[in-house]
Amino acid sequence: MYNRKSEKATEFIDDQEVLDTIAYAKENKSNRELIDNILERARDCKGVSHREAAVLLECDLDDENEKMMSLAMEIKQKFYGNRIVMFAPLYLSNYCINGCVYCPYHHKNKSIPRKKLSQEEIAREVIALQDMGHKRLALETGEDPINNPIEYILESIKTIYSIKHKNGSIRRVNVNIAATTVENYSKLKDAGIGTYILFQETYNKKSYEELHPTGPKHDYAYHTEAMDRAMEGGIDDVGVGVLFGLNMYRYDFVGLLMHAEHLEAAKGVGPHTISVPRIRPADDINPDEFTDGISDDIFAKIITVLRIAVPYTGIIVSTRESKKTRERVLKLGVSQVSGGSRTSVGGYDEPEPEDEKTAQFDVDDRRTLDEVVNWLLSCGYIPSFCTACYREGRTGDRFMKLVKSGQIVNCCQPNALMTLKEYLEDYASEDTKKKGEVTIANEIPRITNEKVRAIALEHLRELNDGKRDFRF
Ligand code: SF4
Ligand code: SF4
Figure 1 (cartoon, rainbow, N blue to C red):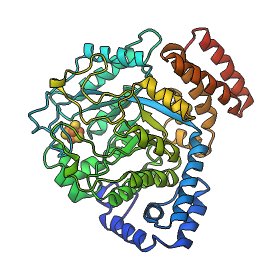
Figure 2 (cartoon, protein in one colour; figure 1 turned 180 degrees about the vertical axis):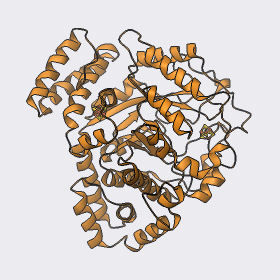
Figure 3 (tube, rainbow, N blue to C red; figure 1 turned 135 degrees about the horizontal axis):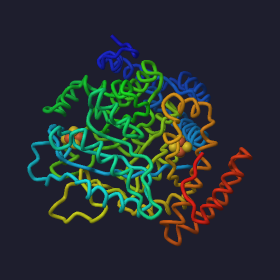
Figure 4 (spheres, rainbow, N blue to C red; figure 1 turned 120 degrees about the vertical axis):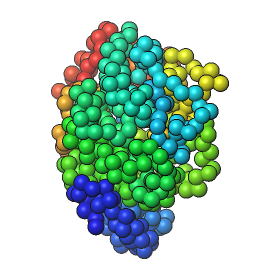
């Protein structure tokens, strides 16, 4: 029985409710009156329900789809302006005891070399990432209590925060590790992580169990209820996502929104971010074997409707996607992208030799961070290296209140410009620097609060003089 407040996975992601929602969406895919009504209400930027979102996703009326896209762009502009937050993944270890059939790190894969970074290697990776200009990392690791125990993750976080190379520093470490206990989540909280990220992969229990035939991840309930435990452990910024292409995209789309509604109803705060990865080739993995892959058009529509359904939640697209696709979906609602990523264990300090490939998936966008920053500037965006919120204690419901009221823009806009300026001073190529300075000059007048604008201008001058790390 569907109950979004329930603590039980099969009740807040009730299979029948997902199926009924999909059927309702199909019945109403050409219901102009209903679709118009949903879009009209969505203009208030308060989001729409999973049922309404499913109708929008299914809609087959060209003019309504056009309206939908314009609305997504408007909402994106209102909450995020033209700022795009930058990050990079750092893979610590590919030891894993799970049997996920879509991931090359599954324990039966004997052809992939197994690697785990030592603290010295992590320090070298972090210096390389800092030298690129990164300030925000997403830590990734396989599940293996012997090789990757929680103590290893905690020590690695400590190492990462301790490295200060030239003007560099990693200021926010988001963590993507397997579902764990409340006690371990509290330890991650105490270690000062930003967001705890865990992808559901698929919300369909039957498919989930088939795709995860062995290992602790096989337990659908334990995995699906992980965010509730993370929040109990004190982590109030969580990032959800599915791996599109594993199961019927409609089911996963509805499940994703039901999960967001559950967290909001049961814990008072929805997800901080939603990631929308699609399956990619990798060692031992052929994406063609997954017959539920989604086209670029459906991918763009999913992002459009997510932007409308959860306006206050960041949407992340990684280098799994090509430059062309990223350009298309940035407009529609994406607010965070990775750049210059390596999806192997290590690989930033020294590229991996061909015969030692440990990548979790092949990246499509292989450009350097500077090339990505340059491209974003050319497309009219402000690449932002901001990490201010959790450092200022703006997390969980405190953060959501500021986002929902639209006040967060008074922090995001100046922080984006100041962190971009840092990047330009310390890491940018000449051409990127030129473009970035023009962007900063054009964007300063758009800080509407006079006092904030004056302080930001003062800090930009100080950044010119070599001072660093200002934030609102
Ligand atoms: Fe392990 Fe994660 Fe890969 Fe599954 S997806 S095999 S848990 S690393
Ligand atoms: Fe993100 Fe907060 Fe920075 Fe805005 S001010 S970009 S919400 S960290």
